[in-house]
Amino acid sequence: MTYAEAIQFLYNLRLFGAKFGLENTVKLAALAGNPQNQLRFIHVAGTNGKGSTCAMLESIYRAASLRVGLFTSPHLISFRERVQVNRQLIPEAAVVRLVGELQPGLKQFPIGHHPTFFEVVTVMALKYFVEQQCDLVIWETGLGGRLDATNIVVPLAGAITNIALDHQQWLGDTVEKIAAEKAGIIKPNVPIITATEDPAALAVIEKMAREKNAPLTIVGSASLRPQTPNRKIPKRKTGLTPVLPLLGDHQQINAALARAIVEVLQNLIPVGSEALHTGLVTVNWPGRMQLITRPAGQRVLLDGAHNVAGANVLLKALEKYFGGLRCTLVLGVLQDKDWRQICETLAPRAARIITVPVSSERTADAHLLAAACRAVNAMAEIAACDSFSEAREKIAGDDFVVVTGSLYLVGEALESFGLSMTTGGERALNEWSARPQSLSTNG
Image (cartoon, rainbow, N blue to C red; front, side, top):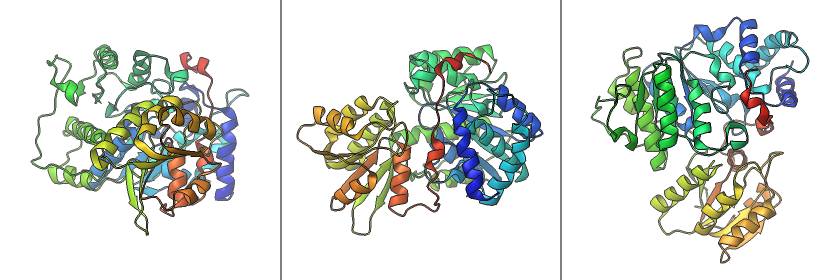
């Protein structure tokens, strides 16, 4: 089997969609020898900021001389981004070997219950992290938490970044319902740390923590509320104020969450102040408020804001870091997102708007995006393009460009600008579909 053939095999698993439930993953992991039982995890869920928080935790623990596995999704360009050890992508040869090792076990599943792409990749990652003798694995959920394939592990600690409306068709149409799904990662007696500030969501998390006797830490402004017996606030001071390389106030919240997690686990995994500081100031997480300067001096801000909450965060960052500077907005959004509200949020900030399709079967129509932008910013020059390549030609002479609306689009931009260390155009592996009614099931 070649790497291309292994990727094609994984691509074909998309036919099985995305099924919510742990039964398949538990069985497949058992057939693989239950590698999760040989590893230590920090399990991270949430609506936005999961990847950034995971990247910070990985950077901190690597600075503390641990061998750290990192499991995240989606990937920007290469499938190999999803599985890393000490920020080294899983080698192509390892992908080929692991796919081959799991194929016999896949034949033991009955028709109609075949493991999905994400379930297979989850077990592949577990096997690889064991082989690599990782001291710790930073483990990001795929979608939700309670019935997400990653939830077969019992971590040292769990974390919930925040809760907002997203994926409502699968996770529920209220903040409370979504919070219940995210809080499904909480395990009995395992510490849970959250930066969630929505009162309704926080109430759900607190209730779940009490029921599971899970020590709860709340960071951010919510932590200023009167303490309860089930809440503890980190007290250690490092004496250092890290300057994050990631833009945005939201990244300061993610950093506070990462520091709180490190503090909660300090007795199990000691981390010195210097390693904590080094990890934060050297963290690298492409495509999230990433500012690049092109050879001719053009500045391009890449941000994967793919929901309304993310668009609001981006808007605040534009005001804070770029003041009154009007931008050229290159916007592409998935159809199953609240693309109208995203347009209403970002379009008024732009002097020029280029809408594009995302490289996805789920893309929103670029002409519909353009119409939605025109409705809230009639003064802007607005055009719909058939591809990012076409848009790139149109924006070549513009001083400040913001590319946003989808991580898929950001990945395409990074590759188009020659800023990726990987190649392969494997973004199609991010595609999936799910059956909403399956959310309430256990299999």
